[in-house]
Image (cartoon, rainbow, N blue to C red; front, side, top):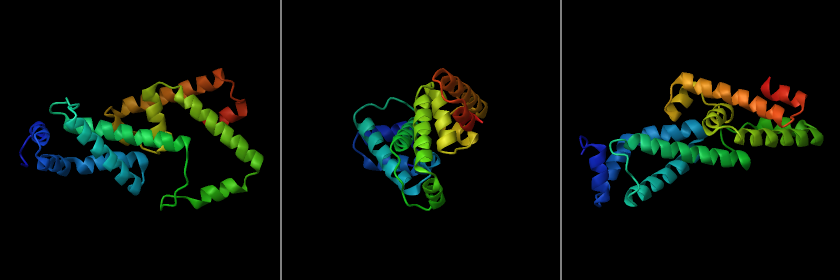
Length: 198
């Protein structure tokens, strides 16, 4: 089974041979898992999202939605990336403080030391910027979110989005230019604009 092509394994799985899917999983689990982890940077969350990806993949194959002959891995990576980014975007809209080894208690302490007026202004600015980000073209928004919020390198972003590093850099550059223009068009106060765009 190790020498069987992906497309034949998928046909076998569709015919009811579970071991065919197990072989696909053995081949690609590490790459799929890493793709998710690079976006969410949380091992427990990656495990949960990996299970969601696998359930979606199984449903789509069994439902006859798979038509990427010979391109199984890129297809699954696309699903994994989209689910992870969707989760990340939802988390940014509704942040939940999770106590993990990645959690920085000093961030919360620093926030608590600000006056309530400062916190309100910071929250308003954050919501405002997030609304502006949603107005960017999808590919620019995706790179900006992965770079600024997920803290991924351009090399990682290029690998995840399947483009060259130069393309990823270009999308980020245009995202920042467009974001600055959107801020000017939507009358963001000048001092706040300096804080955001430097």
